[in-house]
Image (tube, rainbow, N blue to C red; front, side, top):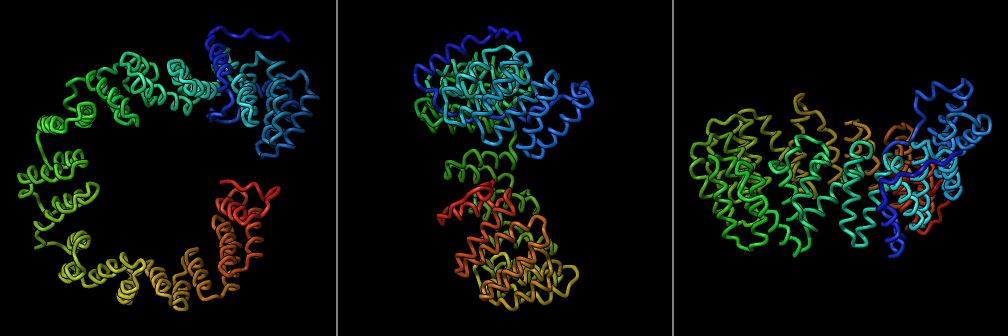
Length: 584
């Protein structure tokens, strides 16, 4: 078969490859990003196959999709012998390589992939995929030089480079150039990846956008190049939403300034912040967050906090003030607590007297979280009048007060509630929320339960809570009865098991989790692993190891299998065959 001519569109790939080999760098195995799904045979092409060809190919694909790679390989190989002139042969040969690759027979897989490239170079979809997977095999074999050579061959071909996996190859080669310090050339490769593979290989495109942004925003600040890239790459997020005018786009400046401020290199940070703050100038006064970045960037190179404060105060004055804007600036000032406290005290004065109780409660909560302004939150709290509050409002206020005041103070508000059962529920919730490793509060929470358990309104789920409180107090026999009465599965069975273990009834605990495993479903692997944990607590190392092996065999794809694998390795237990196949 006539070999196709390779394109002339990527001569830099040859130059880059020569540089890599000369520097001895082409031995690393940088992480490639997969373009997506496994390549299948198109439906329209499948419909054109002879009936017997189609049936045989369908059978082989079914085996492959079931991950029976040995069976699939045999089926594809038989197909290649029976239908040597089939239009699907390039696909079949690629799938034979994939089967061998999946079976970790990488050298044999390379030969199978090479058959696709040698005999069907014009079937670009399959030939390009074969080259990509050949590079993968070499990398997995530890031969980074061959991987680099194969992938460089991919990207220098005008047709092959248009295939999705080539985006991963370009990403790899770009990173290799960065390792050499050839940053401008690396940026070219990343630029090309970000633009060409926006849809077909979005993960590679995303990584490439980050690399180009880092280069032209920080490593080598260049407003003109970054603007050009922003348009070509559909923005720094790849969404392409009104990205035709970066000069007037706050998102563009935010990314540039954010990158400059975020770099860990002090010298580069000063240089980049000086460059981008000057380029942006005194614009976008309506965009507070962007102006905050601009002020930060100027301080980063000027080292003048007074000037920073003056700029921030000027920006605050650009719009009419309200409580939300005051809190927004408190967030901006969080790095200087004394400045933040003074700003809040000065600015809140004009608003606080006019706030209604719900507005004050909202203000208190926002000061506490996320701002962490606890003193200010308490100051507002002390201005709240509880006169006329409903039971629900008293509960909300008391819940906030509980963060700062004693039980006695909190319970005064509960005592004012008209609905005494609601007050009981409030007291129970108070104690229960503070019962972790606190036996006195566990006891107090339990004391509130009898009345609540009689109430249809509040009893839901409380029996399980009662069981856990009893368990926490070490009253395991009572806890077991409560767990059984709650009968909330699988939580009740887990609780009973833990109580049995605490009582030293290991055989009964094992029997309990065996019953839970027999139910199947998502908890089966957890129950199987729980048995191993029980054996460990009981000191029966032999049964523990056997149980861990059972986890590996029964649930090879579960998280518990991974935990069992790690524990067996820590014990120095040799793992072979299927036992070593646990996955995260």
